[in-house]
Length: 414
Ligand code: PLP
Image (cartoon, rainbow, N blue to C red; front, side):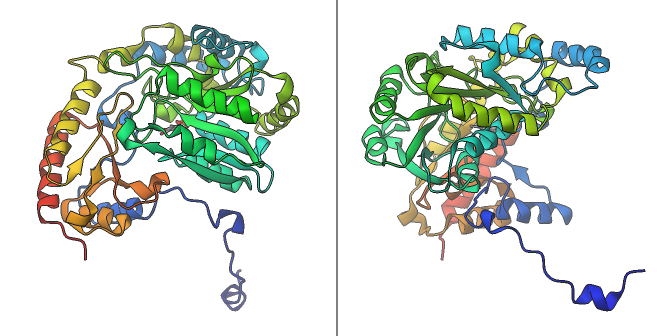
């Protein structure tokens, strides 16, 4: 039997200091407060997480049927990079996107892109190595770089230029310790899609300073309004490139956990890094095998997401509505997203007297029971933005926008 006296004097277990500067606020303190309110029976409208399934975006039947059928064959570990069938389909997808010099051994599946971001940061960064990451960003990149001992250096994306990276700022932030440039294209949280000229200028910087290019393209099949998605790796056949994508967003199967990364371009200079990638990939044995088993079906078959992002489709219409409703609020402006399902509006901080965006998010939660993510959660250094996920159905969004307009009409932060 446990000795109560002894347990009373038990030492305290502190989290590791490696986590001291790690920020991942999408599921942070404001979300915790929302969970607490829910546990008291309050209904919270969650506009904070890009998780399509709870909003009625269903996995294509063909994908579910195929997984069910293959389940008996998925009991064992796979090759640590992934099943042959999955990697073959990903390789063909890489060919369609014009990535150069990609073989089967250059493809790694993961439990979502998330696992592969962490793996790559650990394989690449020594303590103090710098990596260029966008601001605003999808915060996992910054968190994983920090956890790996690296130093995330943020380059600014310019709201005035449809949220494209500020190329001069990017180059000004390169130092002797910079190892790589991360781009998120299409972008979360801004919905930007980068045109060829911008991508070419980023490639030029990488070329001039001998940097690796890491491109997160998980939203590449969710471009609207005819915007073409170009993989930056297709413009950099002479440089070391890693391209990340997966099925969480395009096939509405975020819960199955399947993503991948593709090495391309100059692999000779990546030899030692690849050794590290292989070691870490082996250490985690393999990614979820049932989820790998449907990659071929998902990538090869009917692309169900296509019907959502054209006029009349849910994502397209919801984007248009939210964009217009937000811009109609006095003191709020927002750039129209071209892809994905997020919008990153700006607040007039003088008008609303906002100095602390976490307090703003809490006030909105308490007053209107709407949960959003504050801009600071995306490594945006001013308190003047927040992110909305526009996945909920139109009637829910209408209610949310009415409440939001009412909130801002009366809001004055103290
Ligand atoms: N990259 C970006 C830009 C994302 O927005 C997300 C999820 O929101 C991920 C990666 C992680 O996706 P996965 O479900 O593949 O881990």
